[in-house]
Image (cartoon, rainbow, N blue to C red; front, top):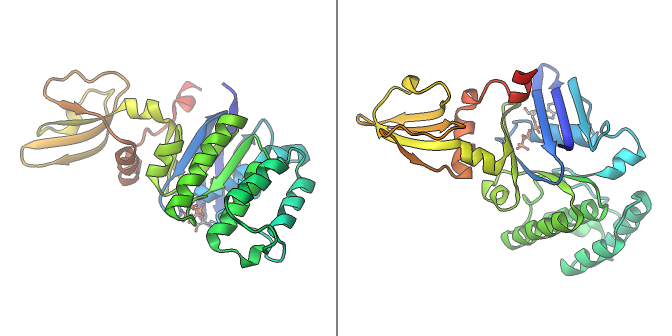
Length: 296
Ligand SMILES: Nc1ncnc2c1ncn2[C@@H]1O[C@H](COP(=O)(O)OP(=O)(O)OP(=O)(O)O)[C@@H](O)[C@H]1O
């Protein structure tokens, strides 16, 4: 497997506080990765480390086979649109595109021009005169037109209205299909992640609590409903993530790689939103060590 992003023991500390701790990841190339987690979980920190805008306190990170931000070749491979979608307020849209063309060896001028046209943005307008959403669209256009191998997007749709959000996500899927670019995007909206992503990373309190192919993750989690029962009596290969009980009934969300055949349980599927919420609710229930480290 070619990993587009690989991290081992990756951590970032600000003074006494760990923004990201002991992060181990292997993100395969060609995927659209949803990075989710509550406010302050470490999503922006991970993205800025991957973009080379920040340096790790511990561990290592490799992106597109190189050290983030280590030189012009490496910078050309990675597109990063930060959460505050930085643009130059005094420059017009057309000037931003000219700057993009001058700074990026693989710049796709036609793509940038068409996208600006389609969005109805006036190329003569200065970035400082744009609305927050329009500025985000400009920053995203530059990120896509750079034709990177990996596109890192920190909450790309947060400032967009619902229609623009849907349009942007459609665009993104087309870009992925046409260019084979890998994408990591952070979002608070699991519905958006569900629509476009095929790989999920969930961060809680600076730690990765769940990471993997979304289909595999959904297949490995089950909702069990049955007569009240102590979760501790479950077989060892059924890992309880959340449990709730009434006087008579128990409902569990479990992770189990093999099928659950206990006739006492009614076994149901778990949706992505419920899965993410379960891990946000019970981050300590996450498998303590990723398989990678077990194998070492
Ligand atoms: N430059 C900084 N200096 C000090 N602390 C920081 C800095 N950047 C981030 N942090 C802290 O690191 C933690 C992780 O922040 P980060 O911005 O990565 O979270 P996030 O998951 O992106 O949050 P949000 O969803 O709110 O954008 C937070 O507790 C934050 O206060």
